[in-house]
Amino acid sequence: MKVKKKVWIKILTCFATILIAIPLLSLSVFADETNNINSDDLAVVEKIYNANSGILNWDIENPLSIENIQWRVFDNEYYLTEIDLSGTDIVGEIDLSACTYLDDYSFTNTKIKSIIFPTHMNHIPLSSFEGCMNLEYINIPVDVEMIENSAFKNCTNLRTVIINSYVDILSNAFSGCISLECVTNAFYIDSIGRNAFENCSNLVFYDDDPTDSYIKNYAQSMNYGFSSNLVSNVTGYVSIMNAANEKNSHGKPYKLGIAYLYDERDVLIKKQQLDEEGKFFFEQLSIGSKYRIVLDGEFAIKRNKYFVASKTDNYISTKEKSIPLITCDFNKDDTVTAVDAETIYRNAASHDEDAALYDLDGDSYVTVSDAGVVYATVGFSYDD
Image (cartoon, rainbow, N blue to C red):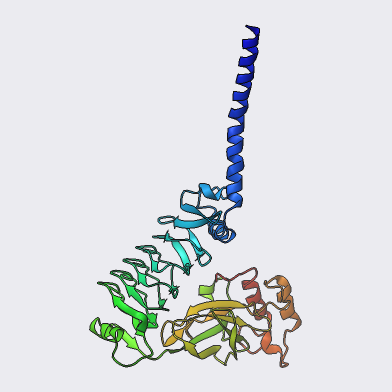
């Protein structure tokens, strides 16, 4: 009996050891799986989460457990194959270009601002961006052969679509895109489905071939615009900010400033001195392209303005509604403080050639009134 008892004790001990080891082994395997996630795909997921950590209830330390995302193993690594964030309030810029095996995605009714597509997929999925009202610009990759039904339906702020290869556009793909002004490289469009551009009343198709073509005939038959002119320009006006609220700022033109024009790759193209009206004008731009304008000056806090050249004549601002620019950062620390106001007092009653730098109210003199403009903008930062 004693021998049997010892045997049973050994059996129970082994069984208990196995029970303890199984979950530990599972955790070890899961940790190994996590370490085998493709680094590029993991970076995509982490970027989305970091921009939306207050919205997404994700365990970012265990990406394989996230319900919105599907993974598959290829060559002993986990790759992102599906992501569905439709109906969430996520924001920001989504970049899927590094996703090698992604074959389905959906961002329906989200608040994303921009999308860079995966480069290997030959289609844009059904309703994948429907109702994304913050999208303004999309650049369709070369490999895309089909834009499926309702892919961008009701993207009400979408203004520009760039086509880069021969493509079929299916029914309702851009229906309800009421701000859409520009589809470039339109000669690549092979076919257009029913109501694909319904309610796009301001739409112009741009095709550098002025002769009869499928897209030209389609545009004419549907009462859309058509143009073979692919050259654009942009105009804007800049003023000195003289109030704590941009809407209440009605300063004089900032004629001492400079405007810099950068392309989508952030390469400087041109720069230009603002004229007596605080105006800049850049021409010979490419229709459909994205640009950045930087406004700056000797004592200015520089300001960025992004735009898409979605039509022939583009306006960043008008003379009546100019862009306010802070021009009293005299100690160049990127903020306005009482220290900057002291500079005004030191230069009060000045009439030398530098006086214009401190004449913020436009009365041709440097006085206490100019210091008031400084105090009005203390601590202000742009909303751009």
